[in-house]
Image 1 (cartoon, rainbow, N blue to C red):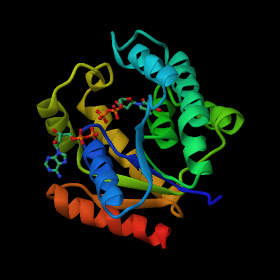
Image 2 (cartoon, rainbow, N blue to C red; image 1 turned 90 degrees about the horizontal axis):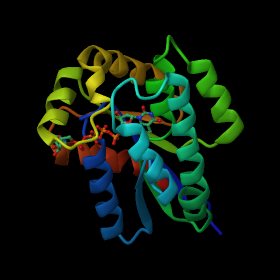
Image 3 (tube, rainbow, N blue to C red; image 1 turned 90 degrees about the vertical axis):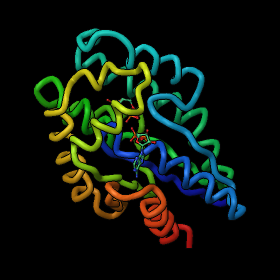
Image 4 (tube, rainbow, N blue to C red; image 1 turned 135 degrees about the vertical axis):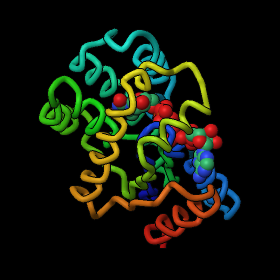
Length: 207
Ligand code: ADP
Ligand code: TYD
């Protein structure tokens, strides 16, 4: 059996990750590839239940440490039940956010939990994507798009624009830390132009 290909999308809220993940999935299917589209937190029935717990409610509903455990629990279930079985049968897995989101969001919260994030990742997850597409937009553009899109899962958006700017810089730093798998794509263009660059970045790994 072939090993499949694991592609993740990262970026701040409203950067256009979900749009680009969907467009890549459609494109790959139309080319005859066997690809699945999934997301975090979520992507399996149990992880979707955890998603509802962690994305709804007041910003202080969970401590940063409890939140880290919930995201990691959701990821473990998603890996066991969705991601690994698909990769094992040679499929392309396209995932809207993965462990880099935890490195950023939980890593920056609670006065900096990055060491705990990395330790838990090593202990319970131990898997990185083959390719990570960072859709890069500035914080104001991301916030404007996220607000225009609406939708109820707003516990994180309540943390505000200053955090978004910090997150953007954090994601760019992660792209340098994991330069072998990250591809940074300018998301401040029309969707089709962004999608063409995404497809080209994935083509490097599919070849
Ligand atoms: P994310 O998943 O990163 O939060 P979405 O893909 O949901 O972002 O996009 C947020 C909003 O911005 C959506 O309403 C989407 O239609 C819109 N959008 C996405 N990409 C672009 C783009 N390149 N130009 C303009 N609007 C966009
Ligand atoms: P998502 O549905 O991708 O939101 P958006 O489309 O607005 O980008 O993710 C929901 C929120 O969950 C988002 O604000 C980031 C946060 N998140 C974490 O804090 N840690 C994680 O490990 C993941 C996967 C997401």
